[in-house]
Image 1 (tube, rainbow, N blue to C red):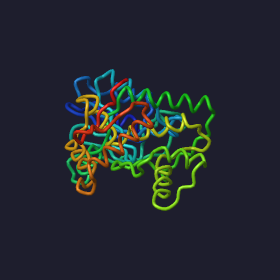
Image 2: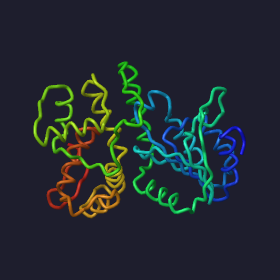
Image 3: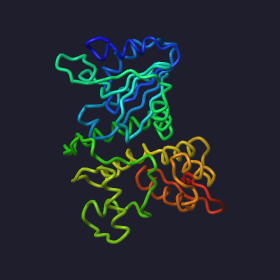
Length: 304
């Protein structure tokens, strides 16, 4: 082991013959680039991180990693509740506290005090972690990257004061499903124009807390904030992928998606889920959707 964690990680990765997996919530492109330079071009690379607007705005993570990974045909996955850090090469891995930043990996004069411990990747707790990690991770796309970039630019132009970065900050869980029927209620409650009470009021407040919306946004910026958050949930990402690929989302698709995120399909009525998604997607994604009347499926609305 060297005195520089980054060199230990790079030495591990450059020995990979088949697969590299990099997992960290904070990944900066300059540090990731140095690691990728050491990975053989014939080796498959998969990276899992999280993209939260306050963290991207603060610069502890950046969107340019998408370009680096796309250039070498690597896979980038998003998991918003991610906290773990893991570097794996074939059957070996390092697990610990270090993110993929110059400071964390010791590649800066003033670096962090971090720890990475070697493990056999086949050990049960490591294998179970990877299985759970990938089960509900969302594939990053050019569209998601662009939407996040656009939202960050708006926030910068409006000099929005962002919430602080904290491990206690809430995020949409992987099993998120819309809990309110009328998504317009979110901005009404957020802006103080509506005093919702009872079950609906509690559901609205919970959604706002999970979205982590900073105060003072106008409605357009608020909608953009909500949109990039829900795009990163497995349910919405799965629905959008199916609509883009097949032109519709069916009852069977919904049952499959609910099962994949750990929800109990029997606890939900597929039409209720589809109608809820229709309202949320039409409200926040600027694309009109509709539920077909002759069957239980969600489709893009026909242009008039």
